[in-house]
Length: 361
Image 1 (cartoon, one colour):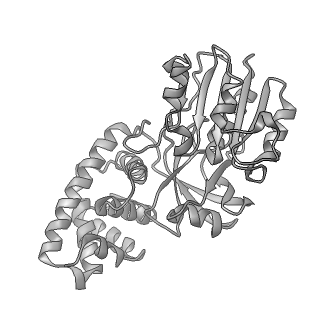
Image 2 (cartoon, rainbow, N blue to C red):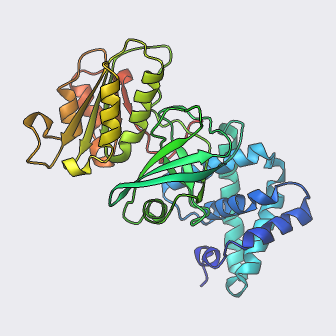
Image 3 (tube, helix red, strand yellow):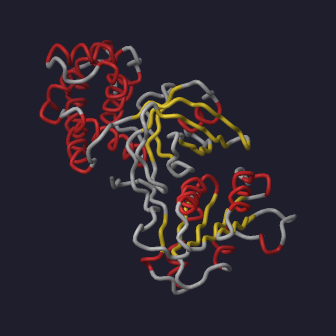
């Protein structure tokens, strides 16, 4: 029996033009044609529902903002009709009465989810076009992408943004800028190619300077600094979890306020410490900053540097510090309970949000 997933897989990017025409026939001027591909692929993938929870949260962030930005909520039924008509036309050999019924139910669920997301998404643009101006490969499975938005992206250090490549339209994944906002608007993104991660694989292995990407609205990842306080910081990073924590360091550097910052950077071996040059420059430029590496599997490392990132970080912990942690699930698992057991107040522990179930604008 044909499935909705199979029907969607048979729909190519050209269907976005059909969708826009179908929507224009029903409600002229509702959606700009230039945004049809992004909107169509995002809503279609949400309806199919084959994303992981974090990917679904990224889709909802993008779509919730799009429905608000273009005032689409009063026309949700019209949009749904145009979407289903387009899929039915493009997947004609697979389209059966049973599949049509299944698709209508899936669309209702997706539309309800978008309505809830739109109520939380805030105002402003739904996506930003950016050009890749730099693509460095410090290790085989990590890339540092430097991108220039056509319009400034209004993000804060520690936030995360949905990212999409035209190579995978409709697939949105979270990445955190590795820098504080700059005068030229440039954003640096760190990404690791993970097994089964189609977007991350493309960003690391296929994307090249000159290509276009899309960034969605920034979301709170639980790592933003409290502007009303100037407590010392203990930052604990693992892998590309370094990115948002490096952005926090840059935020402090932009307006020094007397606080001291200790950044512990975890890696398996010395060769896995992918951002060493940038970290060395930060260390040399600021006397209030201490950067410590932590190597979990490098027998050549100094004894004080051998161990997992959190264990090394706890050697540098002093009462009164705000602790921020970002890294792979294996590093974050149990981190809160471990810190609480050592007497660290819960209010001083900030662990990166997985975006698995919700988002905060």
